[in-house]
Image (tube, rainbow, N blue to C red):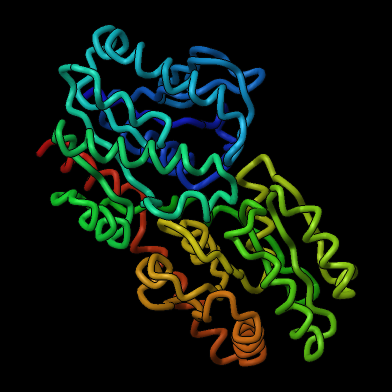
Length: 379
């Protein structure tokens, strides 16, 4: 089978300079699918990236203007990328005799409107209808609000097949009138995590990984850390990621007198370096109030690192109600601090959670997820 995956961003080497969960899904699915299928990826171009490239057995086609990764910026360039996908998809499908196309990100969704012979699938990560302005924090969210409503309208009339990454997102789609949705979760590459051998940091260390934006609530982690510090004075926090909240978070760190406890590592380009840092930690914290899945929790589990995460529905679903960690009330940094102390101070509980991490991670192997996806494609 010849499969074309469409993702706005895609790494340019095996070292995996991955920017987010969607890009991770695109890469690992492409890698697994390419074992038994011919796989192509249509994506955007960043500086120094080739138009035509190949990573392992994955054929990469980069089109549109050159622009860097951004959550909500580069809107004009991203629209041009979307248009490039829309107008080139028919030619690409014909040239490579594509059997299946799977669009993984918002800016690739419009291709479903083209009349092409290949089977069309749309992978949905989150439903933001009614929440775009609140989630983006800008009036440009109105553009996203309109765009998502238009996309789902055309999904209904074109009868495009929908894949959801979680049961949570599937329910949201059903609420919008999309009745038939296949759930194919995100996953992890267990061999990769098992291959990393490192020693723990000398001091009890918490890890945070993610974009530094409002919905990730990293400020809650800092407030919780200030409380934890009273009981564990040598506690440390490593923050991996960048974003518009970086400056304000650094100011808050100073305000809370945590300069000696907190280290901002910024954007770490190579995924293996992210894994090494995470494995050195003793605990992972995810304080986000809005996610479609939460793949980094599985990465933590694969590293054998217990987590403390918010009580949002996707996290409860993905972790099987807290297997491998503990759940705290979102936006409640007092509860977060209590859970951090409970898991770090109780050696018996900590050991049990480490064992659960391995059990949880094994349920999300990419090879099995890729096989399930192929079955969906063949229906």
